[in-house]
Length: 409
Length: 168
Picture 1 (cartoon, rainbow over the protein chains, first blue to last red):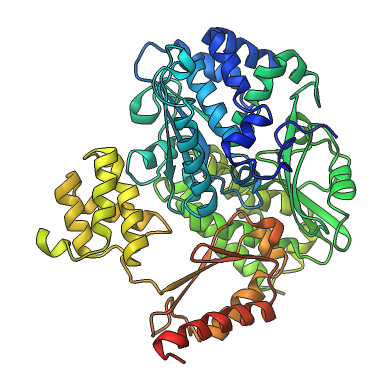
Picture 2 (cartoon, rainbow over the protein chains, first blue to last red):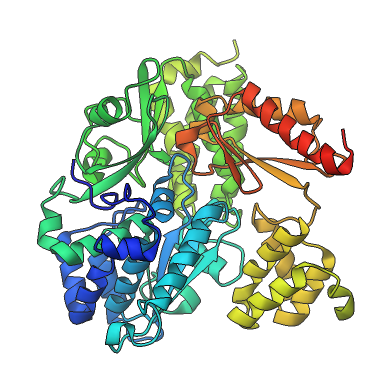
């Protein structure tokens, strides 16, 4: 199976710069610096790479929008605030191959016209923070970061910024607030980051996995990349398999493999009997059809979302009511509290689901939960509140009898 | 006030961060993280020092502290145990792990043990879902847990402590 991002992870000491260079590292940066920024962006556009953080926005377009803005300075920010329950893919990259991200961040900065890059990483990733800082230091010593990189006129600084334990900071505008030293509360959008991002300046913000695809695209060409995996959203995708599976882990596979293939061929099968899966973490809706193809469009057509690729498998001995309760508890804790639909909605939903979990549900509360979910989807300020009820609503629609079974008689 | 601040181990680190990032609000979160790491909490002196040095109102500093899960004004234990309670760990028995921890540490609804040794926090996903159920103790990762394993780990920590402090 062809791997792009994880192709070299088995090389010992890959996080040391000499080993990385020996395995072909920083070649893409050398090549990119001989191209014009516009050509770099064109190559990424040709690859049809879309964002791997969850929103699946075309990366090349995002870079082009930022490049075209007149305001200066510009910033490139890497969103490494991986926090969606079930997601642990960016950790694998940063821990095993930090230079890949550093190289991608320099190329990205060159493409959009930014002289400063920031990697915002979650505070609990202690080891990864250390490895990235070391990688940046090594890259600076070798002249891949700093003034006039590799004899070009391009200068670039890169910095790691630690989060401090707030899931919502993975939402890009909340992340900017956090970078600026504030509470991580989402901003109104528009304006979008390309116009008004970090410090109110044009900013491109990309997920770790997305960025790490860029060196291979520069080396092999966008055309090559666009032929891998599903034509609708090409390339490989990291699937984080967890829950009731025998071999949980991160698997880099072409987009478009089926859920069944992922679980059976890579995950060693279900522990117990398959009941349902959340293909995009606790923010996504349940799917019960294992023939669903794991690419953005197919999962969306099945009524869910692929998101960051956090595939959580649930077996038949698990109560779906308890799953919904566990999901909503996460959102109660992580809601930033600034908008009423999310702050109050998650709490009320948690109370109601708590009653069902305790066998004291009311029949009319089922409709109330559905209505609450609709209101939150329509009115919450950011993606956190909009997605908070996805798991619950799909649980009610697919397993209504389990909720009825928890109604107080 | 400033001379008193010198006694604190966090101060050189904070000054270093401010030198690097400048006297701007952007330095606030890294400074608070450094204080938390050095002192096990954010003491009032640190808030006063930051207010004066980077000129951010105290109310905003409190706002930031209360927003982030890893920052607190309450003194934390020597060992901060963060146990994951999100869905992948829940499906693999995190509730049993939490019960075992509460029992083994004798938490009785407290966050920190009376001897100031252990703080127990239920946290959202730690990105260790392939090792579920999982927890971290300070920066140390522990995965594929069961109740017995948890009791063993806590027992070891207690034993290490009794060597130099005479506890337990």
